[in-house]
Length: 361
Image (cartoon, rainbow, N blue to C red; front, side):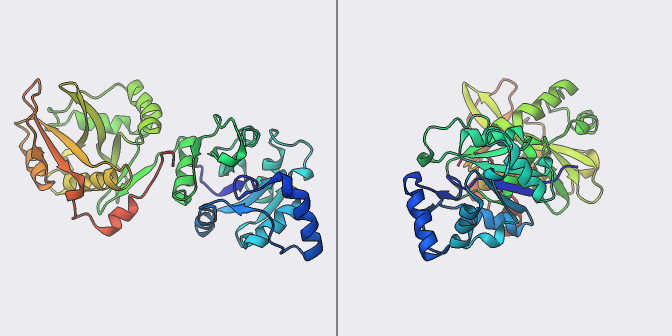
């Protein structure tokens, strides 16, 4: 299975805001006063913490810049970030400059990794093209000082690095390689994005007694399309629930939209294998999802759509502080709403586990 192991950074416009018109003067001053002379560069806000977060999570780091190697080295030593980088690679050391992939491929090889192990961080259109040509997902940085750049080939574009960290980069990597994100880990369960291999197990649960209130299970083709298109676009959806100890699929739960009277509501949905009902597992799962909705998705309220004869779900809704809304439905189902801010029973550990981000910042 693929694993995120390395990151390759551009220098100018990603780590520092360089001023080309001052480059020659800076070099002369460095020659005169030594490499530690403070040059005319401004460190990009948040980039140091991002680099440190990657380093602390054992991600190998390299810089692949078009600048001369002595310039790259002077920069990392002046800023005091040289301890984080294993390799510094200059575009002058390869045959073809960006947008050719040469400098990125050399940096990855120097880290003793492969392109499948790494992500690239770039601010320029040519750099992003080089990263893509090297076979790596690219985090594009929309730097207002870099001029008009075509960042369309980046896997994701960020407007700053203040909230970008190891988890964010790992998720960009996983999304690019079609690896499922882990949503939450509870006492008994693991909630993650679905994969095609889940279909048979999930489908069998839909056919169990007690699931008659659910809408019919989609086809395998629809299930696979849902995985490919739903998660990247919304950042959430219906996820697979696994028994943490056994590793087996025991249910499906998550968030989706439902339209009622022309208005669209975000709805909590769940279903469990019959062997796991009546044991508090559904409450455990739903609380984890509500925490994720609050801490990761910044949602403020969630709705629950329950058939009036589904007494277990109505009972759980009460425990989760859902209150009835005066909204009419076609089949008489009850619609309930909860304010996520009211959920103060979720542990600090669970909240920390749910701190994942995937939107443009």
